[in-house]
Amino acid sequence: MVTEDTILLEKYETSYFVEDLQELSLTLDKRQICQFLKYYNLLVEWNSFMNLTGITEYPEVIKKHFIDSLSVVKCIDLLKINSVIDIGTGAGFPGIPLKIVFPHLKITLLDSLQKRIRFLDEVIGELELSGIETIHGRAEEFAKPDKLRAKYDLSVSRAVANLSTLSEYCIPFVKKDGFFLSYKSEKISEELSMAERAIHVLGGELMDRVDFTLPRTDMKRTILLIKKVKETPLKFPRKSGLPSKEPIH
Image (cartoon, rainbow, N blue to C red; front, side, top):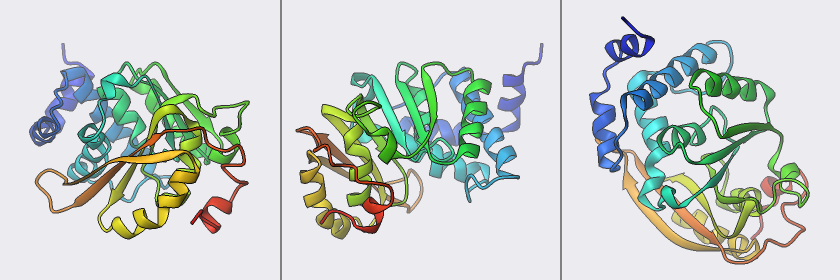
């Protein structure tokens, strides 16, 4: 009997995906590989009528979205993490790749655009993922004490914003002794220096910085791991727009 998974595995070359995963010390079973392939198909299908990503070629999505999302394993042991919130998740990166590879994680995908949430709900259904939810809204709104403030072990974001702004959006969601993890491209040193005060004010402390190159490319990446060492003052995050217009310095 020819299954959908068999068709997917015959259609797509997966050997270099598996090799890249091995470089991250990750091994996936056939079902997990097929979940990534279904995710790719849905991404391309939905991207044809809405703007989810400028990267659509299969090898590039594997490298720049899937492997890049999973590269957090270089600086944090996700087997010791239970709850994760992905702020400004967009097309689901890194939250959905993390959920596929680490099914024990309870994941919240937060995004301010309703049509992206509809896409994410479709992906979650098609991939038969459980223990993962989507929320339509802004970080400033959901970081309030009566909502999701200080509820998570880990906050992640691949959103394009300076580190000071991202810290204000992300750190309030983290429990004390939890972590905020920021994905960055190269040339981060000046940005990191400018964000040091914001990280401190928000209750964070830089624990680790991992600089690396995506497997078999010249694309440089940096992952910053920030530990929440004290509670974030209640006045943060400030009202909508201020964290990006007037970053804490």
